[in-house]
Image (cartoon, rainbow, N blue to C red; front, side, top):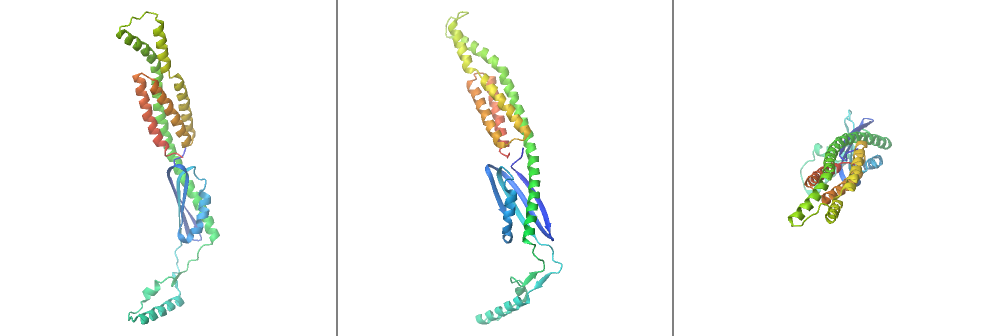
Length: 290
C-alpha cells in the first residue's frame, strides 16, 4: 500500500558536474499527471527523465525537477580579448554618434555576454543523459520508499477504523433478535391501545407481525456487509489499491444504508450512524492512497 504523497532526491556526478533530480507527488483522483522541469539550456534532458518516470505511479500528480551544476573552475575565467576590443570600439563609435562624452568602463565591458569564457568544459551530452537517468532512478527509489512508509501509516489507521466498524456491526447482530421481539410487542401494544381485543392465537396478528419482521429483516445485508469487511481487511493487509478500497467502501455504505432504512430499532440506528462516521474517516484516508 502506497501513499500518493511522496518526496525523493538523488545526485549523480559526471566529470565533476553535478546532476540533481528531485521528485515530488501529491494526491489526485484521476490517472497519473507527470510534470518535468529542466533548465532551459538542458531541455534535451526532459526525454530521459520522462522515460524513467513514465509508469512510476498509477495516479497522482508527479513532478520531477532537474538541476545541473558545473564544477568549480580552478583556472578561473578566460577573457575573450577580440570580443572585448570589438565591443569597446562599437561603444566608442556609438558614443561619438550620439555626441556623448562618457567613457566606457572595463567593468561594463567584462559584463557583456561572451567576453568572459569559462574554462570548464561542458559534459558529453550522451554521458549527461545517462547520468540524468541514473539520478532519476535513484530519486524515484527514494520517493517510493517515502510513499511506502506513508502507506504503512495509512494502512494502520484504516485497519483501526475497520475494527471500529466491525464492533458496531457486532452490536447490530446482537440487536437483531431483540428488534424482532420488539416489533411484535410494539404492534400488540398499539392494537390494545386502539381498544381491539386480541386472542391468544389471533392469526391476523401473527401474520402482521411476520410481515413486519420480514420487512425489517437485515440478515442478507449483514451477510454481504461481513463479506465486504473481510475483503477490505484483506486489501489493507496485502497493500491493495486505493481505487478498489473506494469501491468496497461504496458497497459497505450501501448495505449500511439499507440496514438503517429497514430498522425500527434505536440501538441499530445508533450503530448505523456510528458506522457512517467511521466510513467517512476511511474515505478521507483513502484519498491519499495510490
